[in-house]
Amino acid sequence: MRVVRLLRLRAALTLLREVPRPASRGVPGSRRTQKGSGTRWEEEKREDRVKWRQLEHKGPYFAPPYEPLPDGVCFFYDGKPMRLSVKAEEVATFYGRMLDHEYTTKEVFRKNFFNDWRKEMTVEEREVIKSLDKCDFTEIHRYFVDKAAARKVLTREEKQKLKEEAENLQQEFGYCILDGHREKIGNFKTEPPGLFRGRGDHPKMGMLKRRVMPEDVVINCSRDSKIPKPPAGHQWKEVRSDNTVMWLAAWTESIQNSIKYVMLNPCSKLKGEKAWQKFETARRLRGFVDEIRSQYQADWKSQEMKTRQRAVALYFIDKLAGCCSLRVEHVQLHPEADGCQHVVEFDFLGKDSIRYYNRVPVEKPVYKNLQLFMKNKDPQDDIFDRLTTTSLNKHLHELMDGLTAKVFRTYNASVTLQEQLRALTRAEDSIAAKILSYNRANRAVAILCNHQRATSSTFEKSMQNLQTKIQVKKEQVAEARAELRKARAEHKAQGDGKSRSVLEKKRRLLEKLQEQLAWLSVQATDKEENKQVALSTSKLNYLDPRISIAWCKRFRVPVEKIYSKTQRERFAWALAMAGEDFEF
DNA sequence: CAACGGACTTAGGATTAAGAAC
DNA sequence: GTTCTTAATCCTAAGTCCGTTG
Image 1 (cartoon, rainbow, N blue to C red):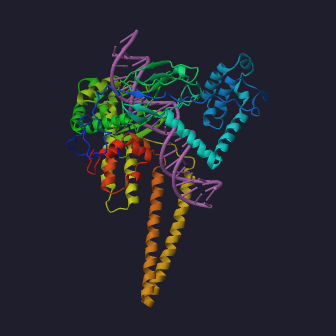
Image 2 (cartoon, rainbow, N blue to C red; image 1 turned 90 degrees about the horizontal axis):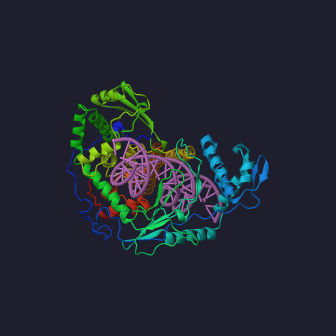
Image 3 (cartoon, rainbow, N blue to C red; image 1 turned 180 degrees about the vertical axis):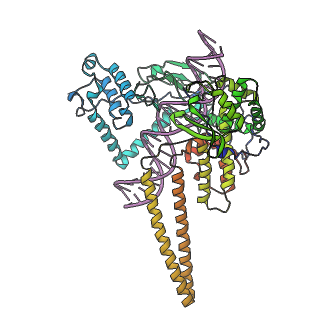
């Protein structure tokens, strides 16, 4: 049912492909830093499989226990107040607090919730509560709304106190010791119980995600470390010491029966090294990509169907970023469209049920092959029926060590950023204009990768505010222009030093205002262009940070303008090694 | 050799913190 | 200061990829 999300790169931008150049060195393992800042990224390399020699931590922090509702807050069934057992009440609050969410209007969500809720009820409750339609959670809902509001109006001191408590918690549970270094943990809290919120029309939405207990949790730490203590009166499911994995604790969640892990924060050394390695693999692809492309083009005409399918799939992975679980119903072929020949129209839901829609002109053999692959098939059939992700990746491994479908995405994203930065940045621009160029380059990648977001509910309003500001600024500019004209006439008449300085002042004022106006309208453009595009995913996962850092250095843009504090910590490895001459 | 499970990465929405406007 | 907006961070679902298993 899943469509591997590879069909991404927009046709227009795939043409921005790079001139071949020898891949640069500096592979993890044979590491060297261009700028030696500390030893953190320079320690000797372990065997790749082994992730640590020492690991010590406090175990996960468990979600706080359920606090029963106060007496004044009541649940009603069929109009009559009803006191629920603690277990049933807890699950009722999960639903009640979501009352203003769209989920609670969905039939599947309601059905799953009600089904699981009834399992938590006492026999007597189950006897009474038979229809969700007769349940009234409004008091419960109001209680949580009020509670959220109350949090907002706390005094400065109270807020400070809460902040300190959170900080203490972070200090106690949020760090581990890994090979002698204190490292930040990513998710040290267990996920609280609640109702499952799947994306798209997930069949399990609304099901009860049950509370994680110490008895569910497997602890992973070094044998000789201080073993974390389970909460009083409880025990761990298991304590093990597996240094070939990165996780500190794990449990099986109750919805999909999959495993959830406590792992390190991206700013940790181990995660940083993995990210570095990922980008080095992508950089290595540069040296192979021409050869790979000519080979798959040749394979479009292969005698063997499997090889042909693989070649077309690979072409999509490379050119568009997608894939082998594409179904017939996802694709439409147009002999001619938009003034182009051989146009392929893609329309399907990808990861997180985000729609991918694109029309791409393709080479004739690709088009002919698609016709062939789709012939006599039902809409639900796979286009690449002879292909699996495993066989495809196996082939990729033969082409280049470490090569998988994912690497193409990283490669194309990073290459595009570098190209776009080169094309858009002008050295003489202001910092603000350079940042706009950066955002545009980033946006080009986000569009390629189909990174979308829902238009925020406040978009129209904030756009309106910006437009108002622009209007005000325009009036100021007009006024300043009139004053400048007046001053010029004045100076012509007087010709003295005083009127000259007034004239200069007016000129500068107009210039400043015009600059501000330009910046505001640029912001408006930026905002509009960003309406449905999310930059953060590509920025965090696909763009080699060394490209951005080198760009900052080359064009004298403070790196804080590009990366927030957390992002700078995540990319500490790149900050330590990238000089202004870094080339991806 | 398909399917399954484990480990790890990627993803957008929700929540919270910071910043700007009043 | 207080309030409203915007930006940053948090959260956890949903992918990819690989190794195992029946």
